[in-house]
Length: 391
Ligand code: PLP
Image (cartoon, rainbow, N blue to C red; front, side, top):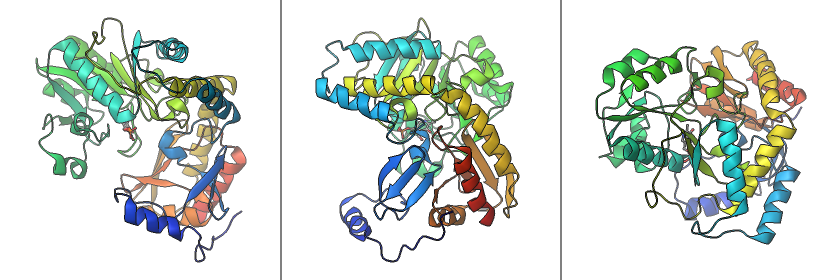
């Protein structure tokens, strides 16, 4: 077990200095410079080793620097990195077919990030319904661009950028009646994360999404699932919707899609699509990103990571629930998307973890978010739990 790293003689200081001088200070960063990784482990500049329970915030599902992913990116980079979407590429067509099969949707549109996927979903909803308004859920997080920000609940994120595209759009989570009450003939879509990530790992109840589906159908309103954080095996299914047996009209994807390579997409059911010229993205679905996504999907399939996420997630969940750490209220989540709710802020636990070789992240101030690569081992989980036990 790694114990109390000594950060006093750090070589990283010059990087901190450059960052503070040259980078807009938008992030509250942990004071380490990460320089390499392998599986569930990352290393800092001084060679200290950490078990990564953050995974780039639910991005590196297949583990850091998986050799198959690295090779696929290298091979594609040597062949062709980028061409305009005014041409076809093999990688994009192959990935589109794969995603349609995995999601059960009809067609996809490619973009580059989660917030861009949300923007795309909103535009698609507006253009297909000819309605303008949206309903989102309290404690939602959908991104930071102006449309996605409008759907994001936290006032701290919204307030400096008003006017947004719509105010007064939020209803309580897991309350279908509230959606029924809020819906109007001008509601283009309802957007829900099946498990809220940034909002504190809040899981939809068994019936909620089914009821929302019914309400949307009755009101000719589209249902959008934001699967940016929950996708690609994170929760123990390919997509979180599969736990609930509910199909949206549109779904968003990003984060783990490219295994660490930036990529996003939306998928929509038959009959919902953009017409020529209605939407575009220069880099959307470029061959390098698509090769990375195809390789990531292949790894998830070949290494059975969906099942692994389910099984080892259950083990992690049980071990966390057995902790006697002061102030722990409950553990919730699915697969390897777990939240440990405390009755207090948990920044000190994140710090304790870092000093003992574990990377952790706190969301919604009082929830420790546990989202390691899906390849994390039982032994690594035991180490994490043992460090948390001392916290
Ligand atoms: N939607 C959800 C559910 C997210 O969790 C996030 C990011 O955390 C986003 C959208 C925005 O994604 P990105 O940061 O790639 O823009």
